Length: 50
Image (tube, rainbow, N blue to C red; front, side):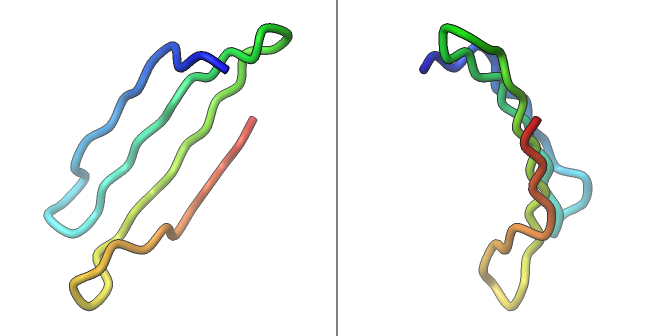
């Protein structure tokens, strides 16, 4: 599997969103994640794989 692109950034000080484009040789897929600070630890609050 090859990572084609990684994009991410802060939405606010306590929220981060990112996406990754993956190529497995047959298909190209996208993965998106939203991370939120919860009591000093990052928690994935949304994950989408397409």
